[in-house]
Length: 282
Image (cartoon, rainbow, N blue to C red; front, top):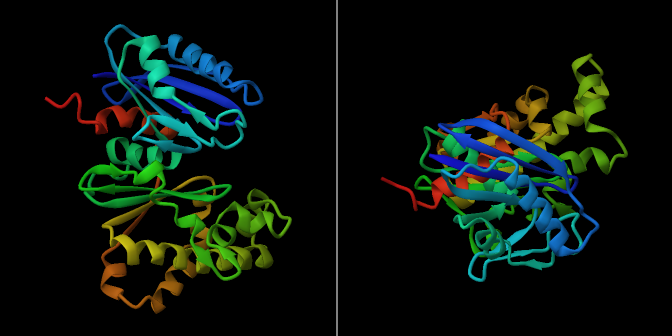
């Protein structure tokens, strides 16, 4: 099967042609984020045109915003002000005469892990991206569960202390302290006790965030991705210590916590929307 994945970001658009789980062609161009709706659509079309093949069976696109699947509208895309309501699926299907599938980027992360990464062994898991903020995608019975407006999995926005959970266990934690998470990680690895203490705090709060996921879904696994997850050794101990107070220990002790190691996951995850649709099952 030949499929296309497109990752729409606030600064760049990346497209790739995928065959047999391998990227065979790739293209990147700037996102005209401050332009009109159709200018951005034209940029996406350009990115697809650069790598398309006549044998392509479908196109998957990950967007940093909500998706109204009932009306096939992309809604309120982060960092692209003109994209309040965009019928992206219809526009691109008309242009390319191929099935197009659109979902938000956190959902694409989880789906990419299912088909290309650490999620392969699990029927039920949650992919959690810990970067600038905290997002999540849910896989149930081997398929993505998006919910209405692709809004399922917004665990980062759950109320916690005086704000929400992502303010305490993502890049927002360091930003709120006027610190660079990357610099703090370097200092902690070099033995800076104050920097390590901050990662201990992050791990404590993350345990509460992941605990909410266990309460809601009781998955087999949680797969962590995003820039902050690469510092997992710095906060794993405090996170696991905080789970000592989790009331349902059987759930926690049978939970696998994995760290994503899949390259190009944003693009692969977007292409996974084609696979997950079931349209091309033999």
